[in-house]
Amino acid sequence: MVLAATLLVAHPGDWPMVAGALVMAAAGTAVCAALWLHTSQFIASACQMMDQMPDAEAGRLPRTPVTELQALSKTYSNMASRWAARRQSLTKDAYTDSLTGLENRNSFSRSLTTALDRVDRNRSVALLFLDLDRFKQVNDNLGHAVGDELLRAVARRLLQVAESVTPGVRHGSVRVGRLGGDEFTMMVAGKDVEQRAMRMADGVLAICRKPIVVDGHELFANVSIGIAFAFQRMPTTELLRRADIALYNAKSAGKGRHSIYRAPLNEPDIDPAALESGLRRAVERGELEMVFQPEVDLKTGYTVGMEALLRWNHPHLGRLSPDSFIELAEESGEISRIGQWVLHAACRELAALKQSHEVAADLVMGVNLSAAEFLGPELLSSVRSALRESALIPSSLRIELSETVLAENLADAAEAMASLRALGVEVAIDDFGTGYSSLKYLQSLPINVLKIDKSFIDGMGKDERSNAIVQSILELGRKLGLEVVAEGIEARDQALALRRAGCTRAQGYLFAKPLARAELDQYLFDEQERRATHVA
Ligand code: C2E
Ligand code: CA
Ligand code: CA
Image (cartoon, rainbow, N blue to C red; front, side, top):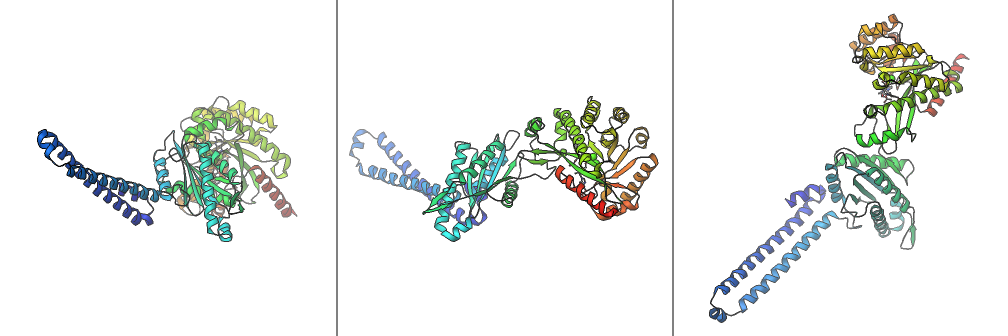
């Protein structure tokens, strides 16, 4: 049992050594224990026999054999405890890094796996992956003895920082290990792991800026740190991989710093409870940001419109896409504050763009609203106040509503659209083709724009069905006097096929990804130049 468990957590390369050590230790202990048990039983029965004898007979028995047996028993007992200590020390060797005394790779990954198995709503795990900057130079220039001493000093400092963040290190929820070479790891498990991990990272960076004197040399052990969080269960290797990626980013960003693993957009590994409380403060803390994706004329490639897309710059999780938090915002009721912020920010930015770029003078800005915002009581007042504040004409704002919302709320949606149109604001059906797609509502709803969903565009030029659907939507749009925008174009042949089908407006990574405000400024400056040289 012990052997199997130990082998499971040991590095495969160490299996023969660990197995041998444990078998020997176990066998040794077992032999001693058996002898000791045997002897003690013998002594006990001898004593019992003597007790049961009449005093006179007992008095005639020589005492020596009993004394000898007692001495023998003591020897066996000593041997047994020496074997036990030996086994303990062998096990310790298998799990301790002999240079620094920290947990070694086996032991650390065992602790990490245990912590990851316990992750639930209230318990998360943070992993810090540390690597000394320029350690190789120390080793090469000053020798391995100095290098080893530096590693020992760093280990002491890591323990010191870990202890200051969570007292009781090594026994509790904080672990420090050395994976090998100049690679160290630290783990925080339980509650508040984000704050504790950040405090540890900051503490380590600060303490490592102080010089370490080794053998008369003043050395600096600057470290780079990669941090990754597990808010849901995941394999140990996955968390290590994430922390490793973050470490790589910290190194490429200039070393001597920490970097947090940035989850790719829409990655589901996000703790909803932590996200929800953060979302409540996101607006106040200025963590929300708008990015803008241009819509272009397929013939000229010039910008004819813009879509405002929301981003949440989460302090620890990085930049989050709306797909990972809009639903949560709807559930918690935060959506109305966020929606108002989006409307105001989008209108404010559009007004500023129109001021500073000639090519932006006639641009329309699309703003996405979720069902709750679109059908909520504050829609009109929010739109009015955003337009007023930015002094924009209403026709430069376009509200986008996903088609999937229409099926269940057709009457209410129609009413909301009618009031927006009455204001002079444009209305677009987003993700067209993925929801209700009934000709009846197209006829009755007061909409201006259809945005063909990316899933149909993906098949353009590749499969006949997508071609046919896109062509029909384009024709429908022409007949009903609607503007049709193709979404999500990534390849040149898609753009060509769309052009051939008579599509004039398109949006997608092929032309531009969603751009931060400064990038958009550059994009519009470049376009201005292109247009000027084209005319000349
Ligand atoms: P959407 O309105 O369909 O927005 C288009 C999404 O497709 C955007 O994702 C955009 O970045 C992405 N995209 C554009 N071109 C390409 C391409 O060529 N290839 C690929 N793979 N993707 C492309 P994003 O920004 O993550 O937005 C996702 C959705 O979140 C949006 O889908 C929209 O429904 C919603 N959303 C965005 N901003 C807001 C907002 O301010 N409020 C609300 N309520 N929802 C928003
Ligand atoms: Ca949209
Ligand atoms: Ca869409």
